[in-house]
Image 1 (cartoon, rainbow, N blue to C red):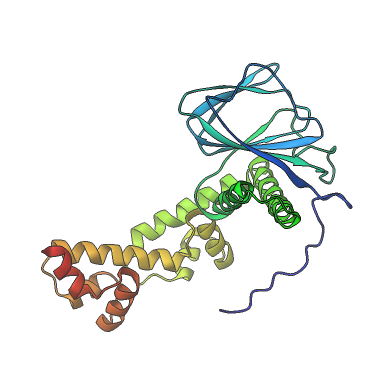
Image 2 (tube, rainbow, N blue to C red):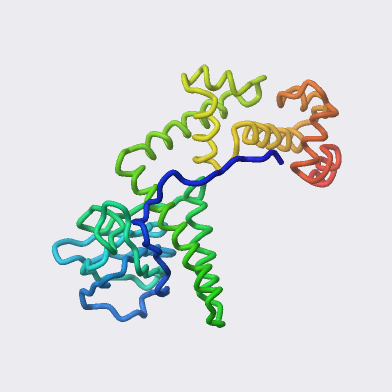
Length: 283
């Protein structure tokens, strides 16, 4: 694997001396007692809807929430919930938070909670992974400084990633990138059987190669070439099971001029050579 440079951040989103930590976590559902508007003083809160839907009640409004919504709640915000029987959510309370340019305990400038849709791909997948690790860590029965230290580091990473996602939503950057990612995918879906190169895609969509690769991976979780190969092998699997074409003809049909190379790629992805795949699944 090539060495990928990371380096030291030029500046932190946290005020000097600020070191937020995970105060507590809680799983809430329809059995959780609700009915009174309350706030968490000196603590910010993240709420992730795992299943079902609910309404977040505020003093002057309510906000509908559904599965995969991540809610950023500032310290001192009065709120409650009206939930349904299928509802489950995971909430984290953060202490000692002080982001640059914001009052202590605030995740955003907004006066009301900010709702983010957390998908399954790219940076969203990273947020989901962090939440899963924090839940597993919280479930450990052994209280220790080591566990608390790890939780603090993970929650700091979660704060940084979620704030970046909120910033992109506010500026429209995320929607622009997402839409371009979809355009790239649509172009590949229309041309993946051709002798297509990254340069061809970039030229057709009037974008540079770096933006092409990173935007597509953020949206789909794979590189453009990985996606092209996967689509070609999917097509080959279909042809193997639905036609009497030879393996060489299928290789040509799926964009491979070299049958041996095609069979090697197919075996790496599917786990068996094309001939064995046809024999196994045609019986």
